[in-house]
Amino acid sequence: MAATLSTFAYLVAAVLFILALRGLSHPTTSRQGNLFGMVGMGIAIVATLLRPGMGGGGIGLIILALAIGGGAGAYIASRIQMTALPQLVAAFHSLVGLSAVFVAAAAFYAPESFGIGHAGEIHGGSLVEMSLGLAIGAITFSGSVIAFAKLQALMSGAPITFKGQHWLNLGLGILLVVLIIGFVASGSAALFWLIAILAFALGFLLIIPIGGADMPVVVSMLNSYSGWAAAGIGFTLSNLLLIVTGALVGASGAILSYIMCKGMNRSIINVLLGGFGTDAGGAAAGGGATGDRAPVKAGSPEDAAYIMRNAQKIIVVPGYGMAVAQAQQVLREMGDLLKKEGAQVEYAIHPVAGRMPGHMNVLLAEANVPYEDVKELEEINPEFADADVAFVIGANDVTNPAAKTDKSSPIYGMPILDVERAKTVFFIKRGMASGYAGVDNELFFRPNTMMLFGDAKKVTQEIVQALQRD
Image (cartoon, rainbow, N blue to C red):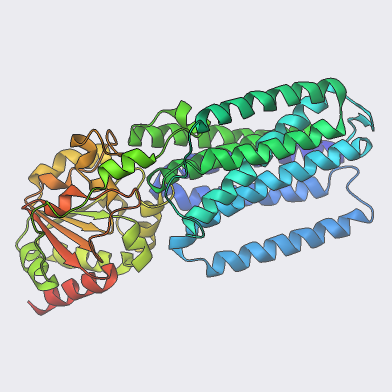
């Protein structure tokens, strides 16, 4: 009876997870999607605790672990800044990968507890599942650690490349497959740990050549890896819900990665092989000196307020700089004031603006920007030609015209927001430094661009004050 109820609860949880993914696909239903996901996970945890064989002295340790993990999660969620979400997601992905490694090791050394055979006589199918979960989990862990370090600025966001790097990755990948075949055939403990070590190294090597401009794709892809790692371990544990949940996360992460790659003109195969991102030569070519360029035109918040007050259509382009300055609330206040003046205000979102998929959408939603005012790249790009003002706040690489004109640029071919087509472009930036991809932005030097130097929040606040005075 308990087993039947547990299976039924797993089915309900799986349906809720599917509804959660559906809800998260659009900003207006994202809160409902989160709620479905939380309820589904709660049901899954209770159902797992009530499964036959889960009783005894070990239940206390499980509840203690849940309390520690849940408490840590609640504390982190209450303290985390929105700007740190990308590195938080990367850190959580690493924990999923590491847990897959630990479960694989536990199953290998105590197969009787998992019902997959005896020491030295583990079922062949279980060895396949175990080795795949181990390999994918180890790659996810080390790759996520590198992504976290880059996003947290603990190491340079620039790509780290060396001659023969892709051939080395390919060779290690082939060797990993050979080791898995050998492990399945022999059940050798030495091969088990060789798989783990090689996978850890491969995850590290796959992520270090990836530049900062491609980091949103990395976060998405690591999300997919963590799902497949969980699914693989689900087979080892004979846990239907873990298999379903892992497959959902893996598949949705892969689809999102494909969408992100399409938005950056990248190949999904290159992503999987760690062969994308800015290379050293390209960065040098695309980020040359600015001495031979026309001088930039700098303005004041009062200048911007005056021009925007007389504008009919204004398109706001948020980027990571807005997130760092925590300027989303004052930006929404500026938009509301301009709307009262009769202007049409819209917000343009590039697929890879920020450091993770949907980063800008989350920030704008936090500031209560109306969902109908937020437009994606393909929808908003035709409107820039009719815009009186493009207000760029903290976005850089995703507005750089070099992506369309400079074949030597490392971002060449990446679809960008066509802000240069607006009559006037205001660009809030602290200085003239290049973007995360290490490329100078040609937009700074265009005759219709006015630079507003300073902290994004402070400059926007001064614009709001000027609008209120007039």
